[in-house]
Every structure is written in C-alpha cells, then in structure tokens.
Length: 248
Image 1 (cartoon, rainbow, N blue to C red):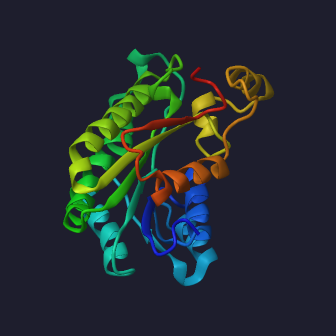
Image 2: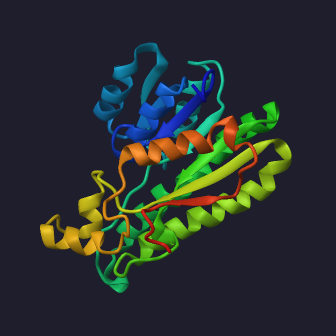
C-alpha cells in the first residue's frame, strides 16, 4: 500500500500502459482519475474499482478538457498528489520526409503539448501544497531511435528533456518529475510502430531486446508505482529505461 491516501490522474488510462498504471496504483492504495479520449475504455477500467476510480473523457491536447480532468481529481476526490502523463500516439514506420503535416502535428500535440497543458493546471496546485509527483511516459525511442520513426522519436526526446528541465525548476517547491522509457510493449500501439504485426516483424523487434520479450502494462505499472511513491523521494529528473536491456 505504498500509495495509500494518494490521489492520482492517469492520462490514457483506458488501455495499454495507462491501464496497467491505474490497476497498480489502485492496488497500492491510491484513488485514481482515469482520463482517456475513449470514454468506453476509461469507464471499463474505472468501473473495476468502484469509488476508488473515476472515469473522465478528455482529449489531453485540449486545454478545457485538461482543466476538467484536474477538477475531477481536486473536486471529485478532494486533492491531487500524482500526475501521470501517459497518453501518447505513434506513427507508422515511413521515411521522415514523407510524414504528412497533420500527422506530425498530432504526434507533437499528444506527446509534447499535452505535457505542457497538464503542467499549467497541475503545477500551481503542487506549488501551493509544496509537494507532488509528475511522471511522464516517454520511450526508448527518445534515447535509441529506430529508423523510419523519426518524428515520434523526436517527440519522446522532447518529453525526456522536459522531464529533466521540469525536475530542476520544480525541485525547490517539493515537486518531483521523472519519466519512464518503455521498450515496445504489448499494447494497442505495438502494431502502429511495427507497421505490420507478423511473426517476422515481431522477431526483428525482439532481436533488439536482450531479455527477449516485449514490455507489459504490468512492467510499467510496477515502475510507475515505485517512482511515484515516497520510497523514491530522492529520485527526480530520471528517465528510467524499462526496456529489457535494449538501450545498453
């Protein structure tokens, strides 16, 4: 129960890594706002936990939705201790010069701008209470880029730099900021990154992961729970690889 009494927001909590984080947080004693564009997904996950979780439909690239998401925690649960910026989008593998502008804009809106928007609403709350934890789900792509995913890689590199910059600026206010860099995982985004979900393509991806398997929502949930707990009170500005050794 390392998160007993904590109130958290998890964006993109209706599936994949986000769902894994929500489930682990509730198991560790937290109350969680499950925010997702997919209303049905958010409701399904939150509905598993009765009064310990609340679903809200939110597009993290829209300021009004982000404000409503934060209000769901502060007014619905009475406070906020943890923000997990998990919502993200990928791109199909393709040469960088062929990526359409609308796809580029979407990738950076979800993977970068959403972090900025959430910070605008959450940081003042954390500053006032002189405590709080922000966790960003970045990617190994921001550390060791794969070819033909250039703009996705760049958005995750942005997220890692934002993590470190925020950590330095916010540390005097008692606010910790960390990131997790998952390797490709068993989530709805996996097929997007691979381009096609075939045995051959899976084998090619797995060949780059020394442990020999994809990451799971449980892997990311376990790491997130630790980084957002008081056990990690001396850890800030870290972008932790949860990657089975891929970035070595």
